[in-house]
Image (cartoon, protein in one colour):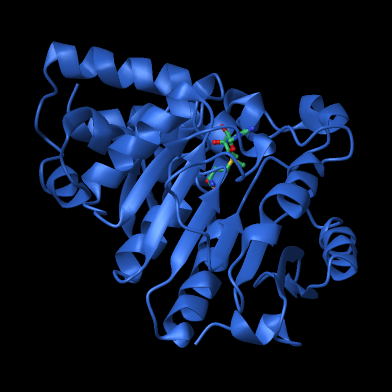
Length: 294
Ligand SMILES: C[S@@+](CC[C@H](N)C(=O)[O-])C[C@H]1O[C@@H](n2cnc3c(N)ncnc32)[C@H](O)[C@@H]1O
């Protein structure tokens, strides 16, 4: 089979699961299989695949056809133009999270001083590592409970050379109080599990390959925000702030809780007009302004 044949076969094979993206997905899988970029693939369409490459490619196509996410099969995804290793046991970073990170980076830059940032429920580390790389004066602590995700997190810190990012293995539901030797935060950011337990079985096939512990936010989807409220936000340094990603129906509920706790809070829509973020500060009356992308 030639490289050109492999692309055509892949496109046909994946059409059922990937539809209009079948071309693109076949190309991505072939890039991963051959460890060559797309320019090479386009310039060498007559080159024969070796038997071992052909069988690896077919195996990748089969996995994809069974619904496994493309990023797991390739083992990597891009977030904020940086590579992050992903695979079984870790959530694949989402585009809306990139938007929250961009807001956090704007916030950090506006403060114009070294900040301590906490990324709670860090998974692959895409949030905290990006902030650490974009804002080298910050110290970023990334908190994750589960072994598989934690291993990806540690690997992604070193792969991205984020010397100012520090992984912490812990259960965030237990809070900050007993963690020793970690300074208090100026900014807390999180994309925690927030799907209601009863809705997990209704998720699309690809998402069901991702770990349920990365998705399950308890009966009302709010278990993590409630823990943050009681066990993390009280430790934010004076003048500090927080920003969370959540499901579309959650920002007003979270904001109301934090207003009762003495925060000024705003809800923020993502670029598609969906209500996806909530932010707060104890001293700035318009926290959304602090997180405006500049
Ligand atoms: C929605 S994923 C987000 C991952 C990453 N922050 C991102 O945006 O792609 C939530 C993460 O929280 C982790 N997690 C779940 N329960 C936790 C707990 N009790 N303590 C710490 N981390 C937890 C999961 O393993 C998962 O990596």
